[in-house]
Image (cartoon, rainbow, N blue to C red; front, side, top):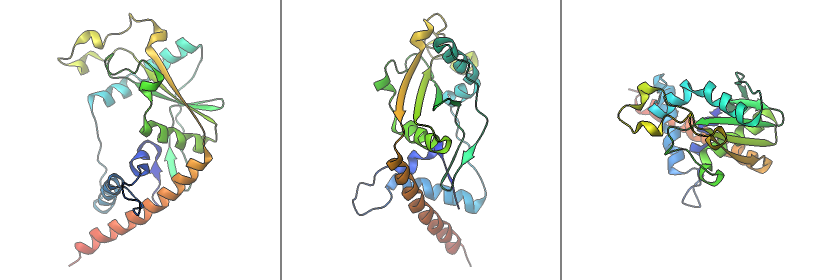
Length: 209
């Protein structure tokens, strides 16, 4: 049975426009892509400069968080799963999950919690709360220097930010666990699996001579 990654859960959780539909058009498109990967045996790796920065500076962002909030959090390396989903959170702290998001630049950094609210990240966090059985999820947007070779021709003073007070370079967004939404995830994953199996069969059938 296919288990959906916490980081991609939002793709299937979007609400269909038509009341009679079980899955949205976007959800079906994402599932069709997974079915194609399954049949043809490949895994597409998506990359961007912002994603590269996130990987390269993750330790710096965790260090910034620890400096600001007087904590000593370490990067989590454990992946958990249940019958429906799988995920590897950034930080498992007592009673909560913290997900570190390293902003691309000063221009993209959300300066307020409201600006940092994101449905995709919220569904990811709800998956983590479920998997780790905790009641709180926190997105921590961190602003640290961008590696120079990634900046290119962009405005450099938007990427070198160490001169800014550390407290101004971490914005947190908080969510509380809701078990009714976990039941919704279960149902949507079950629906997505049925469509996934349907698409795998359709691709195979259409290429059978």
